[in-house]
Length: 338
Image (cartoon, rainbow, N blue to C red; front, top):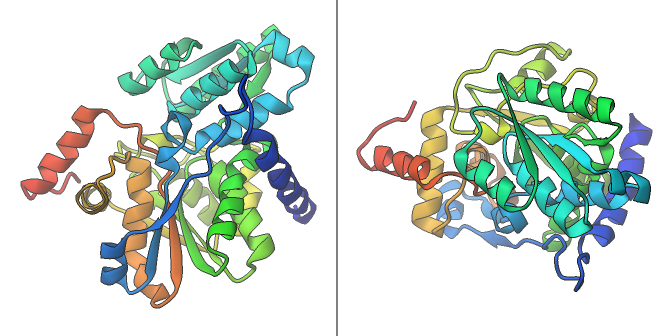
């Protein structure tokens, strides 16, 4: 696995060059997102509290990085055939956009309870959609089976080193933007984001703390890491729908997460909702629940890094207005949303 991490760091550097300038005019590639201080949170925690704005990425989440890198690393033959993927929303939108830019036909398998906003956005980007009963894992299994039967490339949301390398370009940007980071907070679903970012940062900043963040209601990777094996961990409803879902058996992200994650922080639904409200109040950002998980975890523990610099990956903004306003209104009325 050490060799896998070393190779991954090299691939992240290559991916960064590959995904930044693509499209007919060379301007449809992945954006470098800002790293800005949230002064109110710095004052509260005593740490320099920095926000990595992946919600400002194309399609509204970090997923664009991995999807674009995967599409651009496919052979001409595979691109001609088309691709299949599965997603709870953000990866589906990102893959649809990457496929559009790369001139590739894409079919996206989604759980039936996918956000209507995300479903419409995927279809607007030109991809074909297939709704699957059950969980995100059921969708992934159905998509993999269809890809195998049709001889098409399957683009995993996280269990793919090309995808992980694309997500890892966030780590490359973070290092350039703040070379003395003490810690980075990342919401964890399948583990692709934290595997890539953590591998890159650890290679250059060995003493940095890579902090995995989960909602208490849906902490599958945390529970698997705690037990030392991948299993069907129980989950219940959470605002962090983008990170919900089980961990795929055999995924390369599991051993990577074992190596790169230094701390685990779990947060309640009330803490997620409060973090979303406070980001809106202080930064005027609309963020989705998964991003709220990382913010909540940082607000809970960033005082451990007093007088040092920490970064929080704001992983996405794709939430329906109705859901977001419900969270805000419940916070305003003193509700817990728990």
